Amino acid sequence: MNENAIQTSEWVVEGMSCTNCATGVRKRLEKQGMANVDVNFATGEVRFENIIGKPVLELKESIEELGYSVVKLDDGKEEKKNDSSNLKHD
Image (cartoon, rainbow, N blue to C red; front, top):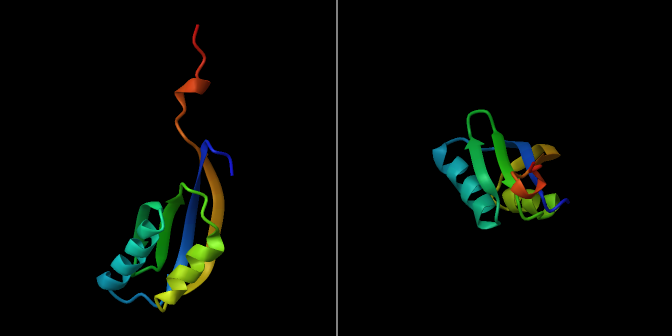
């Protein structure tokens, strides 16, 4: 992964039925270094930024250890970080 890129992931996770479920998933991802974690138990949507380049399989297994099923992985969307060194100066 490019060191100036952030990998944004959007997953669908089944089995979450309440706010506590969503909080558990969010905390697990944050503990593993993920940023801007957003979990919606009602829709099963989980969004986060993998700023450290952690392998997706490890993250998926970590969520499944909590008792949930990751049914859709949408990974690899890279967004450039705001890097002022790439700006042209006249």
